[in-house]
Figure 1: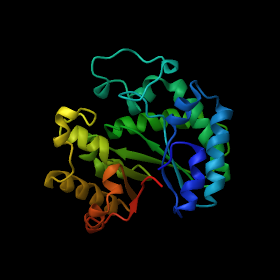
Figure 2: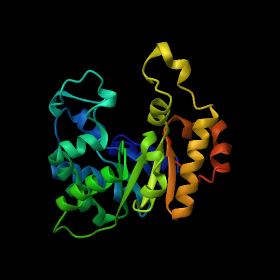
Figure 3: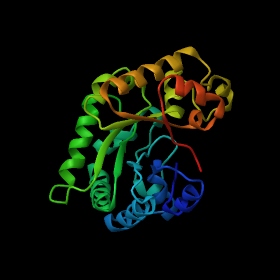
Figure 4: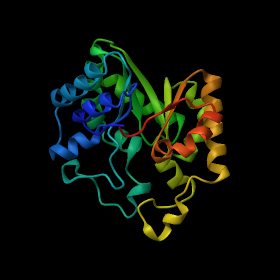
Length: 248
């Protein structure tokens, strides 16, 4: 997992076999403003070149909830965690997606680029956001680019088979999945005792997604805090999961 192109040196030092999650929104937060297509392209291409043939997974702008800034001009919401965020926001703000899509498509000329769609709630939504992406890059060289889904909303997890029939790969975002599966705010200390993965239903759901990925012949990774705890690695392996993305 990286948040900035400047994190690449540490990832390479730790012998990362790829970048499983580049949280692209943090480049915007650090700059304190919107980034142009060329500015994004320079950061993304730097990452692709540094990984030298290893896959680099870029999560599309995942803003909303606890991640926002004035320059994004976000609406005020009573419950932003269940509101205008993730792929829902990208559909509502196609101009944001179009600029990022073009930057990523251009970066894929330098090596393998995986594009990860955040907070997908259904197959139909994934298709719609992907269509916006593809329309935005019309006319650009094809490059080496794949489209993947982030499984972090229960409704998408229950459609894993159908989604993986169309997506090129997928990643399970365990932090938000736990939050939405158990209706527990992961930033609320009053209910922090409920924000735990040690429940059979959570692992049953991960197993269902892993089976769907295996049947579809698609790559599946796990990111989030669960992936970073050695005590859970045996469980992930038992489910057939072979890729994890963690902080350097």
